[in-house]
Amino acid sequence: MRTVRSREFAQPATALWSRARCHTVGKAVVLLLLTGWMLTGRTQAAEPPAGQTSRPNVLFLICDDLNCDIGCYGHPLVKTPNIDRLARKGVRFERAYCQYPLCGPSRASFMSGMYPDQTLIHRNAVYLRERVPNVQSLSQMFRQQGDFATRIGKIYHYGVPRNIGTGGHDDPDSWDLAINPRGRDKDDEALVKTLQPGRYGGTLSWLAADGTDKEQTDGIAATEAAALLQKYAADERQFFLAVGLYRPHTPYVAPRKYFDMYPREKISIPRVPENYYSTLPAPAVKSITRRKVQLNLPDETAREVIQAYYASITFADAQLGRILDALEETGLDQNTIILFTSDHGYHMGEHGHWQKTTLFENAARVPLIMAGPGITAQGQSTAALAEMVDFYPTLAELTGLKPPATASGVSLVAALRDPAATPRTSAFTQYDTGYSLRTDRYRYTAWGAEGRDGAELYDHATDPAEMVNLAEQPAHQATVKQLARQLQERIRQAGQVPRGLTQILEGVRRTPPKP
Image (tube, rainbow, N blue to C red; front, side, top):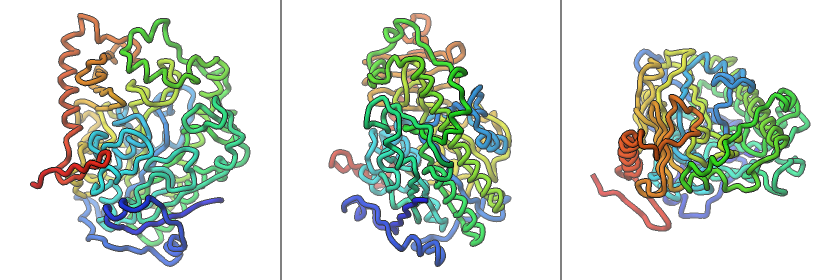
């Protein structure tokens, strides 16, 4: 088992990011676990929420590039028994959406509680404090209350598989302890089948691997998480534990037994009608055709890719199950809030596209399940619209903490107690020059300034696959105008600089006026 542990003690953000970006690895980490938990610079813990004897812990679980092809979301083939059992204990959000369908911007957004036009992060490989040096991240809120914050695997952006086993583009101020697992999937890269030789992370690639679950990077992550939960229980340690699995991100690597669960002849391939691209604005066409090597895949290749994606999902589900088992075995499930999600959605051939980076439902929608103390609508689902920036204020309310003024989302606690509640009326996603609004019935997308490069309108009452663009049809112009006004207001709100936040863009520092 190959695991790298890294620890960086809290330092002023300006000092940290003015130096070369690096992640130290040393004996301090091992000593940390062997000799006890070291706490520095902590404030007094807040009072627990009313009716609870102690403030809940948080277990934050996230998969990479996972869409809603999940059993409890109604997929007819994909087997996810452990995610499904979590849904039976908590609340499943049917309509939760990312703010940017790309790993780096999305992760910076939900970890800061801010929109991408506030973090100024619109691409991968950007460190959070390069753009917003004085931000308080989600896990920092808990650290400042005395919780021990740990990251295992990918929470902020990593190049996959290139950065596996390293700190990637982590934010050291967010954690007391960071663990970077590295498994045989990293060593087996040369065996991976790929559409482009030597390309794995951004290209469709897959491997039915030899060996066991526990040899894979995500298997090691689950082992580490289980050990930490046992330690937390023994020490009665208050914690925020974030576990980021790499699967099902490309390359889709999982032990061979998971591939065997999905015979290719049972897999269906999405189709698009002839002349479909002519119905879309040029930027939308660009978003689904820019990866030329992945266009018009032969049916056999498409089935092989989908099989590998499904196998990776079920493998990841098994590792989540090991973590949930450990939580229950230690009794920590009685006082731990669990949040399970993905960083964005994913296409598996829908709209003729594979992977992410579109403003269709496939790439914008994410799975979201929450369970634990304070969540009373157990085993239910909610149609309430939700955004990933809502994680921050929701976890704050459930644990009795006050989020910083920079947190731009809304709390979803009302929907966690009454599934009929509607904390928000729309969900907002952006990509490249496009902005998209998902309402109860419609998706409206505008490209370019005020939609000058084209628009899309989809009626989910009649077209849940978003294949019929109604934006130019005369009968829908009143709806287009109404949604265009709503979208422009959401764009304005999502671009406001939170008071007290410092932004840095291309070397230009933006400091808001003092209160």
